[in-house]
Length: 131
Image (cartoon, rainbow, N blue to C red; front, side, top):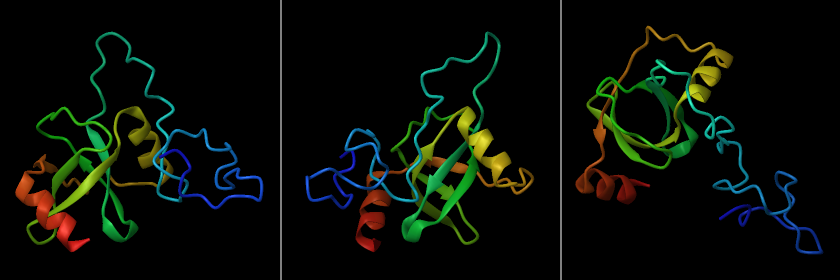
């Protein structure tokens, strides 16, 4: 999509993030995160950070521990632990940048909630219907 949802100036350039339509992210809004560490590899012997950021409807985001080491990428739909049952959301960030975001937001890692699984088709159908 790359800035297609931004408002435009009279010459057709998107205003949004000031990248003039070349940002290459999902869209220009407050929930979009660009993973600027994605092209960097971990040092030898280092395990990837096992927390991910998940976005839910109505703009809510939360951090979840990937206890089963599922191969998750940005955009995957996952079923997560919730206060009552489970919730379905989209992975918005993985890897070391999650650690940076958690530190920036003073997230308490003892509040450990986990990702159950990648969402099944039934989960996705219910999720889409409720949006």
